[in-house]
Amino acid sequence: MSLPSTSTNLSSNPIQLIYAGGTFGSYGRPLAPLDADIFLPALQTLLTNYSQTNYLPEFSWLDNTLIKDSSQLTSNDFMHFYRLLLDAYATGGRQFILITGTDTLSYLGAFLAEAFAGTDMCLIVTGSMRPLLDSDMLQTYTVDANSDAWNNLSESLRLAAAGESGVKISFGGESWPAQTVQKIHSHDFMAFTGHTRAGYPNNSYIKQLPDTRRQHWLDDQMTVGDGIQARAKRASVHALYCLPNAPDILGKQLEALLNEPPCGIILLGFGAGNVPYSESLATALKRAYEQGHMVVCASQCPFGGVSDSYAAGSWQYDYHVIAGGRLTIPAIYARLLWLLLRYDTPARRRQRWTYTVNQSGTTLNKNR
Image 1 (cartoon, helix red, strand yellow):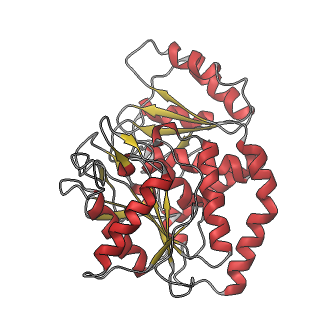
Image 2: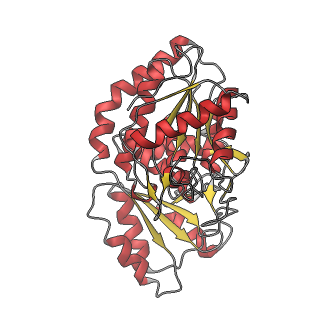
């Protein structure tokens, strides 16, 4: 659906909002997401009324046909938002806000950060832990004073108006580069955390991209677009979680994935990336590499990342496992997915991973 803009042209109205569902737009008893053709006019009215007495950056709505609970999002849905933003960027848009659900917010934000690396796009991803509208007021759409939604949207508008290039997640009065963010609480308003010590892709964004360089970037995306679309139909990223089980179990779990097309596999180790050794797991890791799969080791700990300091973890890198460094699990998922979509061979994907690690200043995988 289309909503009236608060201005008449893109140059004076750079911020484009995308509504994708989630708790932010839920309403009623029991709570359920409102259809866009109901929710967006109500939100537009609230924002218009607010702007009459308070400063509000000018904005417009970017039409979006994909609105669902974020726990239901798939890699194909991530591609939908990539294409939506790519089309808007190609036609002159630069500053965007994406409102989505919190379950996969950090995954989607990190994926879009990878996809638009090297541009001057400003994208703020946000959501809320409580709905914007007060369900005790069923006869009229009123902002819930106890919700975090309005503050999150207001802060996102402020950040988008500033126009700093990059993909950021804004939540609970803070904002961070998308690749550093993870959800750490299931219902508290301070549900997310991140940090600002971010390398690639955050450090690849450019303050102001010359027109010729922007066009070269867009031409490159268009050239590989059909290949990305085709690979999106079969791209997948899996996770294997280390538990205090018999070591052979991990080997069997990995073997079960090896008959699939080359995919991404996140190996969630203990502590700094320690993984129990077994001959079956070592054999499976060797086969995974030979068949074009990318296995990345991450830590189950929310902070600190992995290292090769312990023999209990370093052995896996002899079998071409890639060290996830300090990347969060959502960021590793996002990078693996983008590499699977963007590049057509396992060798090019690994080469690109090494490049991104060099750019981010984290410890390189050993791949001995």
